[in-house]
Length: 220
Image (tube, rainbow, N blue to C red; front, side, top):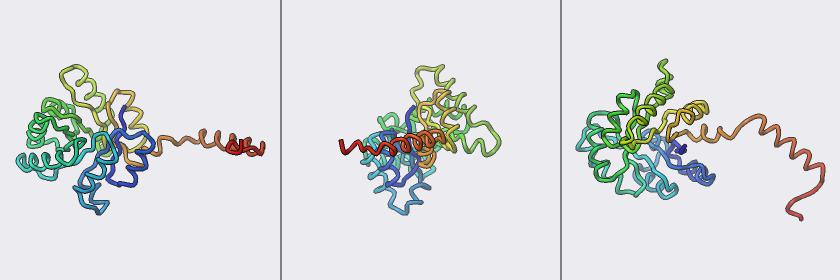
């Protein structure tokens, strides 16, 4: 499974990239707005830090303007994945950009039927939002299972399932068990994956025993 981080915070991205865990980045207008920085320059900077796909979202809602914005974003760097909403105009834009060899991330997916449409339009990624479905009493993970099963039934579908709106580690674990291709996580959730109380307890015991020896590896 590939890990993307869902943020536009340059410092967070640079720090996580050093761990070797990052395969890409997802952003949206809201995340960029939180940084207070220029949208285009932020995307360019992120693309220089991370080698994998960097999702940059269009802000228009009509096909012609979406397409123009998408082409401009794709020209910023070779690893830009243009992010479009799952609307009729978004699907038209996805098809046009995909035909030009541009990566496209179709976002705001909330049904398996929508995911089928995105795959047929040539999307590189489909982004189903599990947390938002959970918020309204629906089963977000069932949607992931449905999409993965459907895509596996049709080898001609090349679209990768990118699980979005992940709120906690269980979302990630269940997505991996189902066989989703990518998970995009907020920085705090990604960092939290490493934590376990028994790891902390074990490390504390090891260090206490080592301290009693009075030795130092660096002095040898």
